[in-house]
Image (cartoon, rainbow, N blue to C red):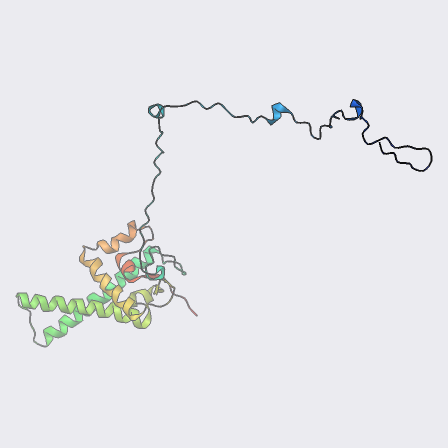
Length: 223
């Protein structure tokens, strides 16, 4: 046996001394976290197996499909709705100006026929003469409306009632627009005057020649 002597009277126990059982007993450790067993269990719903034949698929409701028809041209080139920057002339004044232009045309035709008759000319009832007469009438009407509209922005009848022709942008019509308007007069008249009567049914009170030439009649402005 080996003995160690320390300071004082304190003696250390011998190395082969038996340790009492109470010293080696397991000491219970405190619980660091209290876990609730009920809370730790996940709430998993019961899964009931279903046979493939028992599943009924509900078809989706059909939704309406909108189809918008457009044009590849620029919107400025195809004005489908007239939005004039100037007010549209009243229909009554436009009709009165049209009658005045018709009177000018009839008067010009009568003078031409009188001069032709005095010069010794005569018209026979042959298809060729009717064709020449029709061509001369078309040329005269086109030149009358086209030239006056392109040069003055109005015909003599429109000037008489204080009206003028403008395009969609509010400017005076170009030569091309003026010729299209003159051609539109012929189309409106050849369809038993339906092109002129169309202004009574049109939502914008425009005639065929107005739509064809992209022009309209407005009150003449005095600058």
